Length: 348
Ligand code: KG4
Ligand code: ZN
Picture 1 (tube, protein in one colour):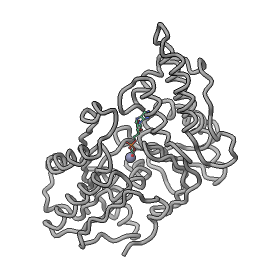
Picture 2 (cartoon, rainbow, N blue to C red):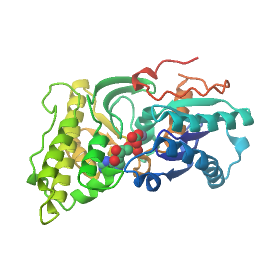
Picture 3 (cartoon, rainbow, N blue to C red):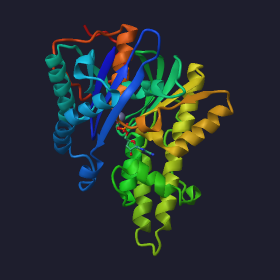
Picture 4 (cartoon, rainbow, N blue to C red):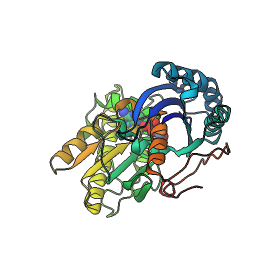
């Protein structure tokens, strides 16, 4: 079965082709991505209307590109998958409209996919795929969640952020340090030149006894220090504060992930979402898990942030598991707000 996947929930247009067969795990044939970062950078963040318009421009050229790279034709596609939510309503509507129109023209069914399910299943396309069950740490620009994943569609929320997401903490702190958008990678780069010990920043909810997170207080602490140091004669404080911020976020993510593994008795952790690309997070999780006989799985770096491959893959795995059927009603059913824990439910 050949699945074409569209991702358009925020500021990247992603298109990919994934092939499934009864005998093997799903295989990524090709994927293409257009990042809107340069377009939004001038505004310091994503402008939803511009994002939607750009998805319209990119969707079909990227579709042609993945078909050419895989040596396939439109007629070979069996199912068209798209991100149904969560995300920006207008941006989601573009992806669902393109997917539904293309599928209707081809006489093929469509399947709307949960963006976070795409992220958490994305390590199945890596060279070191996980096996169920596992704990998933989902760390993106809008979400920070720990889930118990029993199988495809079996998602139980263990804890989540009560305010800002980890990616948001990176992005907002980066802005306070005068770094560009998106802030996470920029802050991580600057942190390499800083001393994390130079600032004692809070580790919110670290000892809360549950698996919830909070990052809003950290951002406030960064703002207070940034204002105090703004007139310093040299800029080293920025690198130090970047390093301290990254260390605080990473320590909380690592400790809560270990606590989730302990609470569930599971030995595998899957890290997914844009913040999963962070090198310090990977280094510290690897070190903490190796010492305890635990395994950590990541998506390939190129598939950590938003992409079409994870959407085609999630569709493939849901169809293979028989928990959902693709549809031919071609309804634009986007869900800008959509809790992941509900996607196990079979939608007729
Ligand atoms: O999953 P993603 O691409 O989009 C959402 O679904 O939100 O995640 C984007 C988030 C942004 O907040 C970005 O700053 C962060 O992931 N991010 C990083 C790194 N790369 C991306 N944060 C820290 N270190 C990185 N290397
Ligand atoms: Zn994402």
